[in-house]
Amino acid sequence: MILLDVVDDDRSRSLPSRGMPIQLDHMILPVADLDASIEFYTDILGCTYEGEREPFSVIRVTPDFTLQLAPWGTEGGVHLAFALLRAEFDAAFDRIKAAGMPYGDSFHAVGNMQGPGDEVGSHGSGKATYVFDPNGHLVEIRHYEA
Image 1 (cartoon, helix red, strand yellow):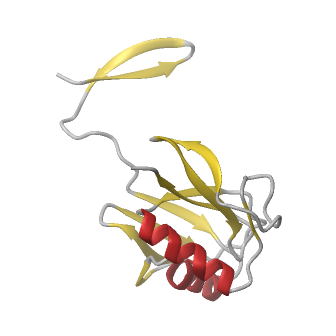
Image 2: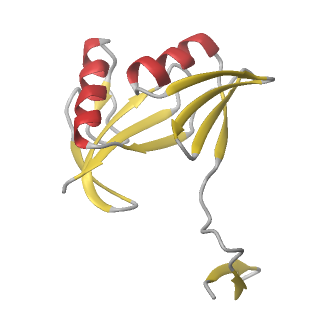
């Protein structure tokens, strides 16, 4: 039996697994400019637009994860980090540069036009570049060294 540790009111307890590891299925991302957002996540990052599921526009990121763009307006501030294979990272970074988008080598240095930088992610150290999407959300693209 697999156990998950959960913190509840400063007490730790274990819960039995339901047979499937927890993974993120989808995320609702508020956007101010829907068309520019679809273009960014598809043309720049290389994700797939799957159409409308009212009130959302669905972007397929992986076979198991979608972004649901919600046209509710936003001032930005969400951080999304995408791990890519090296070739996909290079292609996305080239598209960012070709589009003239400000980028940086750290989350606090977007616009310094340097990168990629060395950053730690969920699989350890890797190379990362940061950019803002059209809504002011901080987008990190990264790859891990083999």
